[in-house]
Image (cartoon, rainbow, N blue to C red; front, side):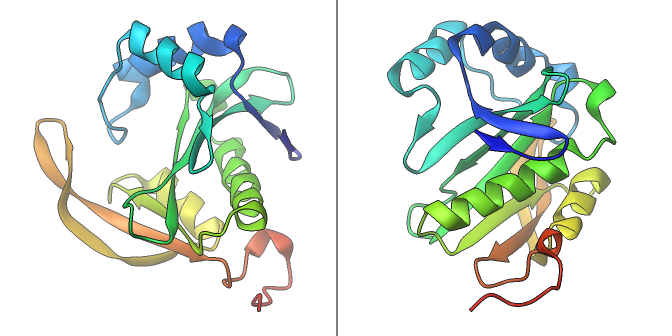
Length: 183
């Protein structure tokens, strides 16, 4: 469990599965920028039964508010097998949780956890250019814009460009204050 000021990140519990699956299949709630692939309920539950959505190189954590509401989830995974990197993905489940800093804090907590417990040197965020909220999160968390990946993302019936942001283990993390580079 990773605890912050306004959110707690914790592993998925069996009691969470209905809420998480409903959010997974609610296309409207996933917004214009989240991939639309949907697992069957059987496959979703089988994945949880096999490994609890938690393995050495990938995992899903529930974003829980101080009121103990499930606000969303954040996950990490290897984007490409030969890169020394993790990619993060996140989703809020309801507009009532937007604008409260939950995702920013979740990203900060997970970045600190991954850099303190895993060997990977980079963390990526892949963001649609029009997703201003995610771009602000990346910038607040010290991620650097590396460039545009042309036509790399299929969504809404077409290939779209995405922006690649990264944070290296040695980059400053603004939430730690001081802005010192880690050596």
